Length: 466
Image 1: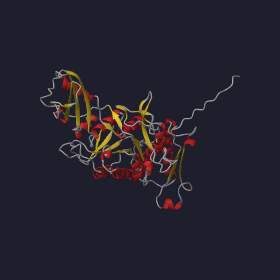
Image 2: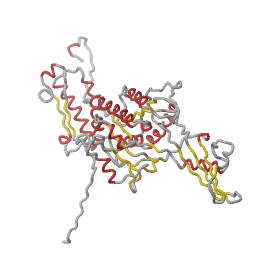
Image 3: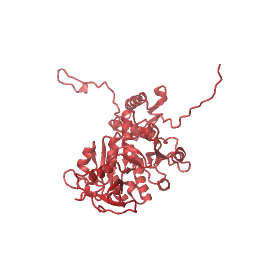
Image 4: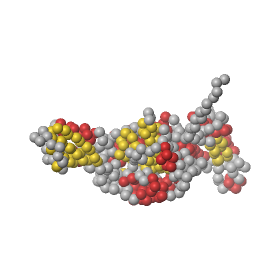
């Protein structure tokens, strides 16, 4: 209210804002999953292809994007009989050809491990046995670039691409997007360590983390009876096995009635198996769980994964040493390990820039992303405000109040706020007269982010009694 404009006698109310402007923290764990889906339909078939859709549950995913048809399950039945064809013993073995397009399984792992809100970008539908193409996934990545909200980029189908160099080229484009936008982080699956390190390049490595190996999951295969093929062998009176009458039959055939014991035994055998999946989606769920329970400043490691029997490859300390610390290129790869009494855990917390003292740890990079994006959005209100001391004080106070909250939460080191961060703004500090004449308001922010205790050393020694 401008008091000089008052000309009519009366009583005038003027509300005075006493609370200073504040920074609202942005979301930190909203992945964008880019891959193939069984369908992509909101109103008409295909209307969600290359249209990012925000979802909040597995059921919502199923309604828009369907599930997955495995189509490659084989059950081997081996019957041992006596000379009179009396059945002595029957064994069942299940094998499955992994679906190369298996987004649905990864979504199950994401939600089971703590994930909630995410985006799904369907790059197409079709036969799950068909190999993905890097070109399709890159188109999905281009669509995600238009969105402001996603903070993690994940490609569940990437490991199905035949060429390792093509996989890494896709990852490099995702890392470049993260480096340009500075508000997202790439979670990558590693299929072949040597090839991955050879082809991943050197740019924007601080904006991504890689995980290895694949996981043996407790998920149930999604299939129909006609997707299950029978291989039947019969060994008569201890002789060599020969083909049995059920050879090449489907589980849905009349030869295996769905009310019989064999049908139930086959279904039970399939239920004890599960798809082998690379870990990025499950890790993204763990990111979300850690962010919610502790904060983005906590390293997303030493976290047990749900719905996992164990890693597909067991890795010992010596093998992990070479993966965790790459003395040549710095390409740190975080390992999933089976730890006694803790189950299957994420046993690494490094970005791909493993030799970089500033950006070695995932939580440091993601916390900076969080603060940068939060402060950026809050500072928009000062665009076109007078570039003077009053504005500088408001900006500095707003940011300092936000960082004090982060320090109290445990995100920043130091016994006092001044040891944890600094915020500088003003003429002679961060700006020259020329900056002000050209409309530039420059703020400098420094933070001492907590780092994980990656190597805990316990020193023991003998002491003499006193």
